[in-house]
Amino acid sequence: MMTASGTELDIRQFRYSRDNLAYLVYGGGSAVAIDGGAVEEILTFVADNNLVLRYVTHTHQHADHTCGTRELAAATGAQPLDFGSISADELLPWEGAADIEVWPAPGHTLDSVVFKIGSVLISGDTLFNGTVGNCFSGDLQSFYHTIQRIMVLDDDTVIYAGHDYVRESIAFARHLEPDNAALDGYLARYDAGWVRSTLGMERTVNPYLRFNEPALVRLMEKRGLAVASEYDRWQGVMHLD
Image 1 (cartoon, one colour):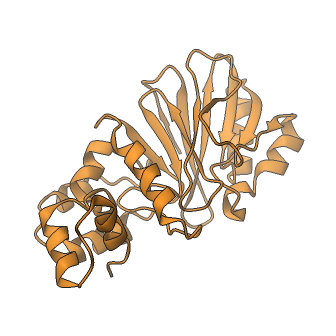
Image 2 (image 1 turned 180 degrees about the horizontal axis):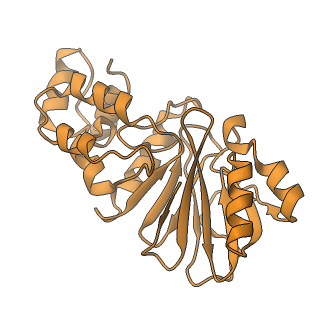
Image 3 (image 1 turned 90 degrees about the vertical axis):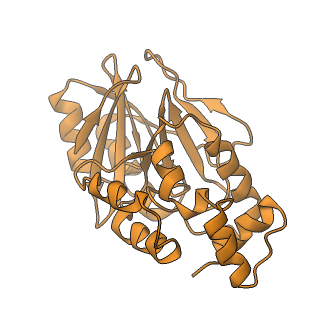
């Protein structure tokens, strides 16, 4: 578990199951749980810090992300919030010092959302540290537009993902770009107790944000994949193995 400050709210990360990551966003005595599968740890933290858990929500409807919702709501009276059907940005009804923005992020699933809190992005299974989620929706074009939107955020945007896949992701990135000198430094900064990166770091190593990079374009061409347009290259990098 680790706390990060620097927005106007604090964010606590909790690990549960093998590699899932849950989040508590809190400030001013109130809190919201996102992908709250670490039920006991969250309840303990809320009690120890005299917080009122007002909302429980999630980045998408997969069971490993919703598994704590009912238990947290029952234990605290928190209101479950489902943003899976939103078609435009919303603000979480929050009375804290900073806004919690909810963006639709179709791609991994059609109901995926991400949460933007100042310079932090809680990205669920849309953008991992070092990779992206599988396109279970089958809608690569929507996924492309979601990634495009994230890519225009500032380099210092902190990425908090839904799983810790860092070691596997960097191994695959090295398979695709063995000469990428940024990979060693990225892996050296990895901390299993506080899993995060910045968008600037992702731009240096994450193949799914680097689909315009010459080395990856050459690899796609070598594999016989279309590269004429940016969307071609996005589809291409999603099919590399």
